[in-house]
Length: 293
Image: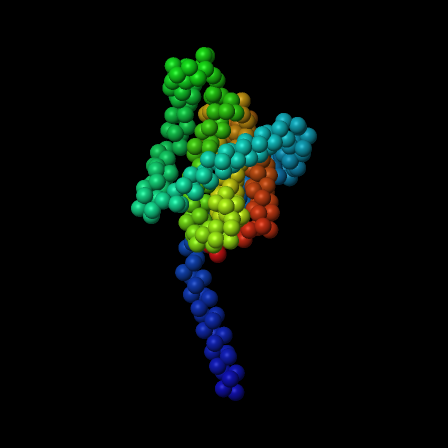
C-alpha cells in the first residue's frame, strides 16, 4: 500500500514537473510557431493554389514539364558543390595552421576570420564587384605586374560568383574544423611517430580521420547555406548564373506568381531535409551543431 502511494506521488510530481517545464518553454514554442511553423505551412498551402484559386498541382507539374527548372536546380547544386569544395581546399589548411598556434595567437587569427561578419553582406558583395570588374584593382594590378595583357572578365559570370560566395562562406567551414582540430590530442601524432609513421602518414591516418566530423559539419553547413543563397550570385552573377533563390524572386517580382515561387521553396526545403537525413546516416546531427563527442 505504501509503495503504491509513493509511486502515485512520484507520478504526480513528474507530471507537475513536465507541466512546469512546458510553461517555461511555452514562450519559445510560441515564437517558433509564429516565426517558423506558420510561414512554412502558408508556403505549403500557397504552393497548391492554382490560378483559379482552387487546389491544383500545376505549380509542381510546371517544374517537371519545363526543362529550365531542371537546369536551374542543376546549376544551384553545381555552384553549391564548387563553393563547398573551394572552401575545403582553402579552409582546411588554414584551420590546421591556426590550430597549431599558441592559444593567444590562435584567438587573434580567429578574430581575423570573423572580421567579415562585422561588415554587411551586401557591402562585401559590391566590394568584390568593384575589385573584379574590368577596370578594377585586380585587373589593373595584374596587368601592371605582367600577369596578363588584357582585362579578364571576372564578374557577371561563374568565376565572380564563386569568388564572392567562397569569401562569404569560408568562416562557416573554418570554425567547426578548427574546433575539431583543437580538440585533437597531439600525443596521438607523437604515438604514430613512435610507431614508425612519417609525419605525412601520421597526418593522413591519424589527424585527418579525427578532424573529419568537424570537416563534414562545416562542409554540410556551407553546402546547405549555398542552396538558398541569393545576394552574392544575383550581384556577381549578373543574371548569367541563375539559382533557385533567384528564380523564386523573379516569380514574385516579375510574374507575381506566389504559387510557383512557393512550390520552388517547398522543393528546395524538401531537398535540404533530404540532405540532412542522408547526412544523419553518417554523422549524428548533434555533432554537426557542436554537441556530442
